[in-house]
Length: 381
Ligand SMILES: Cc1cc2nc3c(=O)[nH]c(=O)nc-3n(C[C@H](O)[C@H](O)[C@H](O)COP(=O)(O)OP(=O)(O)OC[C@H]3O[C@@H](n4cnc5c(N)ncnc54)[C@H](O)[C@@H]3O)c2cc1C
Image (tube, rainbow, N blue to C red; front, side, top):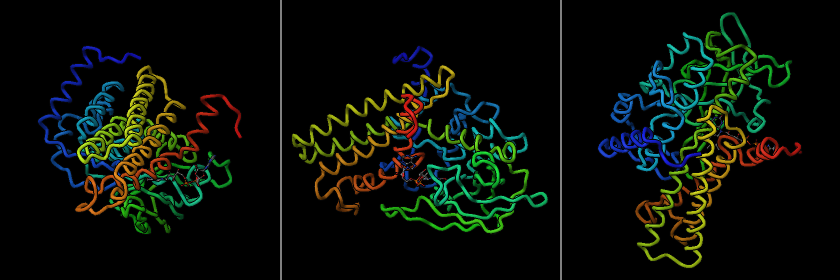
């Protein structure tokens, strides 16, 4: 791993940095992006012009065709200036999956609309009782003529209330071994028979939902890949999800903001100082773990337990940073009223929002299992 940019990488970094200096970019919210962002049509257009909405996609599909390292540099610079990167599940997970496994009709129908921001996507994987053990999912899709008919329920579906389409996993062969009877489907959220019910989290935010399916008809042409082989396509989508590790820079910035506030308000004590030093060192470690994943990807290999280590460390660090802020701010840190709370209530919102980060995208326990079995070669419990 080389830590310094090559001359070409340095030029690319400067190009991104210079653009961000003058681009009037909307800023990322502090609580990890779980809150709703305002409409950003202008910003989307500015980025789209440069192919920067899906910079990792090949140029022929409207991306910038960036290498893994150049994309990481771009992510770092965006995070450093706290600029919002457009994306979401369509750009980050579904698009790359369709580029790999979709047929030409599916690519034509969906990729350009994702890039134009015309369609928002949500991920219909988890069900009550099927989260970590996703392959046990029970939502059924039964073939009927040219359609599949879907019945069942998804849960924790982020953004389903704002989404036009869902990529989902459904069971098409209940008699096959559990990984073998699952199909990957694309579903228009306006199809009759779909009910979306909000789930409000403890920070009083509406981010995820329950989604119910009652005799929902999906054309068979919306199957991605082969019927009953969807598990492997779904797993590819998850790889794209878990290797999005851009937030290690974001962590350090949140820490910096807290530090500024603590200094300005004279809240520093020996305990608080020690905590900030620990978090600062840990943020450096998080960055190095991200570099490790990137250098594996850049050499053409697929990060496995290394991505789990980075995900695990980053999400738990986010929680520790949030706790450090609460320790430093004292009783007032718990306030959420922007008029009265330190940093307009961001610390309390981040504290509550950070709880979800060790569950979303695979729990910490599951990541530790991966590190134990695939990384350390320990036997399964
Ligand atoms: C903010 C947020 C957004 C989400 N967005 C989406 C989304 O858009 N789409 C979607 O499909 N899902 C989404 N999810 C769901 C998420 O993927 C699941 O919550 C996660 O996979 C865990 O599954 P579960 O909730 O069913 O918990 P379970 O799997 O039931 O786990 C319960 C507890 O048991 C532990 N556990 C389970 N299995 C093992 C094991 N083998 N070894 C040790 N411990 C174990 C877990 O670590 C956890 O502590 C989201 C979740 C969150 C929090």
